[in-house]
Amino acid sequence: SAVISQKPSRDICQRGTSLTIQCQVDSQVTMMFWYRQQPGQSLTLIATANQGSEATYESGFVIDKFPISRPNLTFSTLTVSNMSPEDSSIYLCSVALSGNTIYFGEGSWLTVV
Amino acid sequence: QKEVEQNSGPLSVPEGAIASLNCTYSDRGSQSFFWYRQYSGKSPELIMFIYSNGDKEDGRFTAQLNKASQYVSLLIRDSQPSDSATYLCAVNREGDTGRRALTFGSGTRLQVQP
Image (cartoon, rainbow over the protein chains, first blue to last red):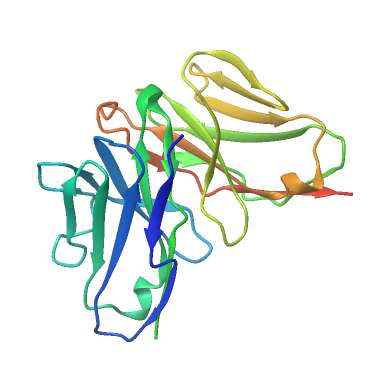
């Protein structure tokens, strides 16, 4: 497995502001993913972030709202821009390891007020 | 039709019993199947994954896959109160084996009664 650390673990933000979530992995990984889990819902993929290329966004998610950086093989950031209460969710970083195993970080619990 | 469907539950079983969690998927090209456990307020924890038709056992857990019926299940033997959680079924989407992104079901809440 891998140790996947996310920061912040929780935050309360004002609407209209932006927050950047960091994801640090203890080993080099090619593929990193960002998911969102809205209250009472399951996980929805936001985008796939591979080092050295632009992130690939899923339908319903756009780069202007959720810019992603992937500067190296152990780190990625997701920014939630111009937040509204509808952005209140858990944001989860995920990595794919050898053998097709996929693990999640501890999550970042975001509340927008 | 949702891509991955699960009964939301709650599924209630007595301690020591076998809990059976079911999942169906719509994409026949799906190639790998995952079960995650999520405790309230926590992130999903990988239990096991399966690629091939048949059964795969890991401790008290057995995953069963039937690609013809587009059905995957998770059996938990000797259920314990600590197994009470939401169980998420996830599928690696067709054509995305290189990406390894997952599509999740809505989860089944399991309650194990002492």
